[in-house]
Length: 121
Ligand code: AMP
Image (cartoon, rainbow, N blue to C red; front, top):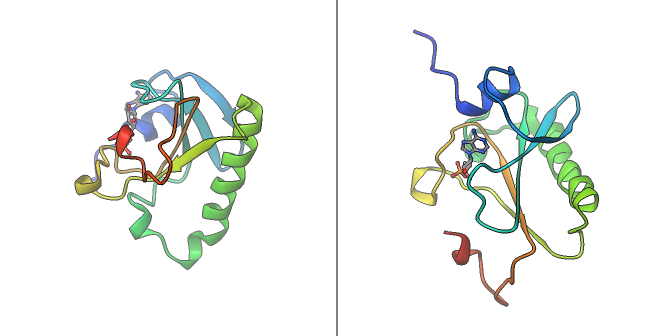
């Protein structure tokens, strides 16, 4: 039986709505529905084949690099390029709830010096 589609696959396929900020051939960027910071967006690859970062392999190298470039581009678009945090939750134990690789951009919130992001947890 086919795996059930993730919510992000449904967004990419236009089956459920999202507030899209950016799109190219490999990725979309949407507003997080439950923001943990004043700016909280998700960078999502269109490819559904990477559930967790730990599932990525060498064949995904260019895509992974592209996602980082998109993060930089979107941070400039949003005017947060001076201070943002990029987060990837890998695995349920780390808080991952959607098993389709995605990067969180969090910004416009005070970042505790030296913190690894517990305030978002
Ligand atoms: P994670 O916990 O790292 O797997 O992140 C999943 C993120 O997806 C959470 O921050 C959710 O708020 C967000 N999310 C879930 N459903 C939607 C949706 N329909 N549109 C936008 N963001 C969503």
